[in-house]
Image (tube, rainbow, N blue to C red; front, side):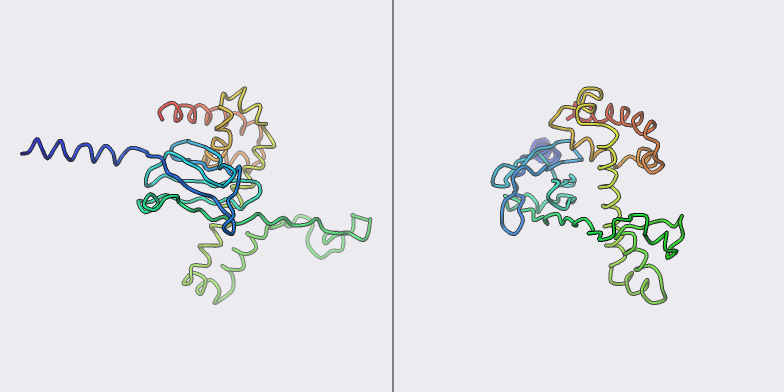
Length: 234
């Protein structure tokens, strides 16, 4: 009887640890999106959606998915058991909003806030996300109210996403896709997945923050070796 229980339970445990095909659809306002990257950062798997926004990717509960395209706001989340219950898994994203360049009537570009004495010359220029976090955590009542409502946590998450997106843009500035493929030996189908993998590395993040491109390129080679090993193990 004990042997029977072992034989019955073991396959269940093994199956629970295996990745299975997950069918999904990426859409904006019920319209499927073509050519969107669906990246399983946990398993180092990357695919693109078809003309109708559909995709199939190997995954399991607990895996992290990143939905990326230059035309949408990047979305990142972890799968749970319910993600596999009703397939296809519909993933709704938001179209990327682009800001138009400021129209300058005066051709003299030397006239700005600094030249007019409105702000100090060396004052740091904050991004929109940074200003929102500052506003939510300063003052007398705002920090307490925002902490209770969860707004501060949401704004900090938006700021983290913005910084990672900026890091991705900077990485593309110091190494081309061709260099990643030829010098780091990353398969062309996994380039985007590799870049998302790199932004989680704290040493690389610090090097990029300091503007040390030489150190960043050196670290990228080491991260590439780890990423290739992860691909091989899969």
